[in-house]
Structures are given as structure tokens and as C-alpha cells.
Image 1: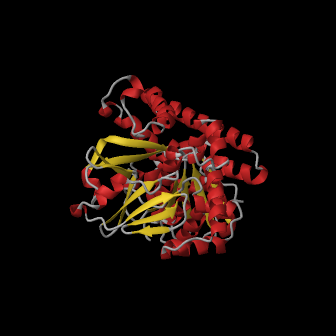
Image 2: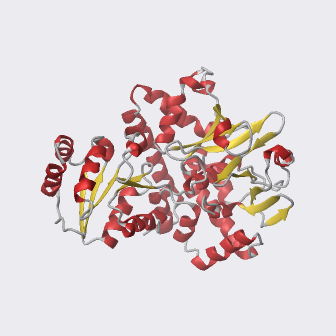
Image 3: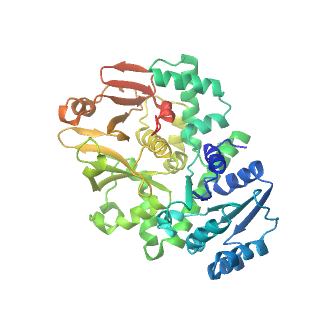
Length: 446
């Protein structure tokens, strides 16, 4: 059983008991349904699960219920367990099949929220229920799930909590990590870059160490995403699928920037804006937008026409890049540039840790100018702090001319920067060099 941070967030929701329903969001195959069932087993005596795809009669009953009392009656009619006040979790899955659930939840929580806990989840909620977060404040609490981050993968690999705590202390105090631990974590990271964080892939690797089995699961997930695009993207499905398939190739270019003309030969970004947004809203891609100036607030200087798209899971990207890249990663070849893989990993960690724009857009930032050069990421903390982040996969990690130029511009007000690399912790002036695995400690609240 994989240890997930989202489970603790669910338990915290139950502990606070605010009479809000819980919305669990996230891309397909990140483990939402499995974790909700685990949450129910650990925290409730009674559990009612209703699926709006597998139980179309219930979907129709939900959509046509005139009031909360009628809806609750119909829930009891379809339930396979008793609904006992104070002891029952009611879980409605595949909520994207019935948008009316938003309004229904409001009235259910109003009338029954003190006695029963309600959870809803589903696939592609960001697409099908784009306005779900506009529900009146007080009725809905959200837990967003992602693929396993690197810390969760370390747990799955048996890395002791004490070891992670020691490395966290080194991160917080800017001091070197024990060389044996450093080497082991780099090795574990290289495996993570290949396996990724999709729960089924991680579980298969933990059980068997069989990379072929992992890759079959990754292939299935990629094909599932393509089928979802065909089913849910409407008359833009062909273009959205083309954009999705182009992501690995675009990341392999020198700029890593997505070029609109590569889609259908048309260079106008505004023509494809909704197609890019569909993939981000579905949780299968991560967007990183260019800013004109690396200073707070970053959102004020974004240029929507210049951006990068990353995969939501680095393992899926590695799979799409082919076996040669996978072998290079596993054997830690130092003469290979893993730029796109490493940047995808960092993007994934930053989004999972809240270092991105607020939901529902949830994009990252990077800086590029002809005069200064490019910074891979800009992280923004509350209080007006902006941290430039460079990602280096090779031996030349101290060569960062763009970063040096930007730090020298007084008007930007940048007093610190971070270079993520494979070397141990170092500090030089305004720049701190951190092992790339330490991205797992970069949190919005830190």
C-alpha cells in the first residue's frame, strides 16, 4: 500500500468537521478512488459508494431530484451499506457525468452535512465541471491529487523517515548531505524519472522491479488519456490529441517552448488557446508561462503566447522519449543532457507543492529575454519574494550566465537564486546550489 500525502489532507478535513463536502480532483490514474476507499476504511464504520457511470439509474435519479430530502432518499435506495449518522462517508464518483451534482451538494450539505460526510470525485473535473470552484464558500473543500512526488516515491522505496528528515535539515540549514545518502538519493531519483509517480506504475515497480511491466502500465495510461481526449474534447479532439502527442518533441528542442506552427502549420497561438487549456484543465499537462520581468507579482507580466508544456508525470515523458533515454537515466550517464526530463520533474514538484499560480489556472513561470537569456523557473512566495530557479543536469552546473545577469539588475530586487543539479549543497554569493532531489522540500508555505 502506497503512502500518500493526500490521505492526511482528507483526514484533516474530517478532523476539522466544517460541514463541507470534500471535492477530490486530479488527473486520471493518480489514485483518487483508491485513496478515498482507503480513507473510508480507516476513518468510518460505514461507507456508501455510488458511481455515476456504472450506475446510470442513480445518475438520472440525482439529476431529477427536486430537493435535498428526495435526493437523500434516493441515495439510501442505491446504498449497499447503512447510513448511520456520525459514522458514514457517502462517496459519489465520476461526478463529471452529472454537473447538477454541484447544486445538489449545496442542499445536501445544508440539510445533512452535520450527520454525514460527503465526498465527490471524478475524471476530468477541471474540464467538465470548470465552474465547480465557483460554488458558494462554505459548502466545498478541495483536495487536489497529483502523481506521487519524489518524497512519496522515496517512501515507497523504503527510504527511512529519519533519512529524509536529515536531508530536510540539510536543505533548511544550507549544509552538505552525507555523501552516501546523497548518492543513494540521486540513484533513487533516476529510477523515479523513469518510473514516474503514477500509482499503478510505482506499485508494479515496487512489487517486481520489472521495467517492462511498468512501461506497459505507462502505455495504457497514455492511451487512456488519448481516449479521454477523443471522448471529452468535442470537435477539437484531433487538435488536442496532436498537441498532447507533440509535448515530448517540443521539450526536446533547445528552447523547449511550444511552437504553434508545429501543430497544423498555423503560427497563431490564439487559435489553439482552448486546446492547450484543455490539457492543463484535464491535469495531463503542466503549463509554464513566460514573464517579461522576474519580479513580484509575476502574473502581471505574463505573455500567453510564449509558454512551455510539460507532462503531468515525468515517467510518462521518459516513456515517450524511448528506451535509450530510459537506459541513460538508469545508468546515470554523465555525458548525456537530461534537460527536458529534469525540468519536467521540477515542474511537477513545484505544481504539487503549490508553487504556481492559484487554481484553476495553476501555471508555472519562466523568464526569457533576448538581452538577458532564460531562467528555467520563477517561484513566487507570499510576501512578494521571487526565487529564480535554474535546472542543470550536467557537470557545467556553475555556468549560468542568464542567472548572473538577472541577479545583477538592481530593479528586479532578487537577492537569492537556486541552481538544482546533481552535486551536493554549495553556496556562492546570491546563488545556492542544491541537489535536484531537494526540490521535494520546496513548499509554498516554507
